Amino acid sequence: MSAALLAVLGSAGEASAATTLVVAVGGEDSAAGTVERPLRTIQRAVDLAGPGDTIVVRGGRYALTDNVSIGVSGTASQPITLSAYQGERVVVDGERLPASHTPVGGSIPRAERGAIHMEASHWRISGLEIVNGPYGIYCDGCNGNVFSRISTHDNYESGFQLQGSSSDNQILNLDSHGNRDPRKNGESADGLAVKEGSGSGNVVRGARLWNNVDDGFDAWKFASPILIENTISYGNGYNRWNFPDFAGDGNGFKLGGGSPAPAVGHVLRNTIAFRNAAHGVTDNGNPGKSALTRNTTWANAGTGFDADTSGAAATLTANLSVADARAAAVGPGTISSGNSWNLGGTWNGSSVLSTDPTPLTGPRSVDGTLPPAPAFLVPRNGAAVGARF
Image 1 (tube, one colour):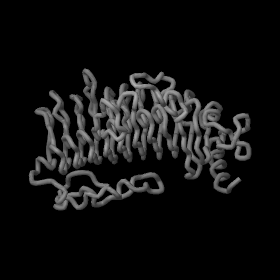
Image 2 (image 1 turned 90 degrees about the vertical axis):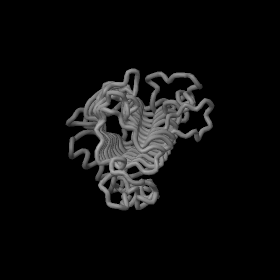
Image 3 (image 1 turned 135 degrees about the horizontal axis):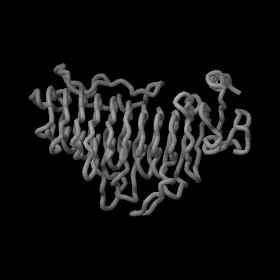
């Protein structure tokens, strides 16, 4: 047993006197779940875990034949932890799941949605890479969870979807990219979707959402405010997979929708949306009192800030649009002040210090936070508008 792993196991025991279960690709599900005799599947560890327990997954590729189903909850004081061990690369691969290959026009049965399917609360999940699933993570009726430093990419639906009656979840430092849905020709696979539900206190922070077939972030029909901050969304909505009858939307941040769309006051601050196929930010019919502060859009094929829904009462403050097809569409009820289009002048590539996104799209910091990009889309004239990273 390595000294580092002994430290992890020992600290878990001292904190809660709870069980630590170890999973490894060479383990056996009939084993004890110790370092010397690890379990083979994440599902077996999930089935054994209870409040306060910790599941440590050793590096390797875990090829699923059934999705990982999480139905048992921790508690607020004793959450259940599922994490990769000490930075080892853990890949949860859903390519062999039947629902990953749902035919065009077909629907995915509820229980099969997600390489990881959750209907549980008070989990701490971190450090996993989830690929090729029918959704990456699908969480319905989930409360008080923390998801951190997770990568969801190349899934056959949204990389991460939270829905239903779900409150107080934190989605931190998520990378979600290249997700697509052949069964719908690109209509619904987002990088991150918090949609079709309600619940207060949900937070998205430090995410990167890129090259997904539909939207980067989608809050369609979610009836409670969501806080999205320090997040970037780019390159979404392009038909990289040559789908026929392509239906991808291509917004960086979609802050609502539905028929009728719920009136919700989402909060969007210090975000960047660039080179998306449609709008950088759109209210998508949401007539609520959303607050958009110090965000930046750049080179989107549609409008930078689309906030012109009839009856909307959104507030847009100190936002920056650079070289979008149109800077902003603001409705009569919207309060717009201190934004680049209010300040006037020309806002193009030469008006900012840098249009090179490489620093922000490179490797994350050791703690999972976004790398610094102090010049990216920062006004040369020193105007206090737009995001800063």
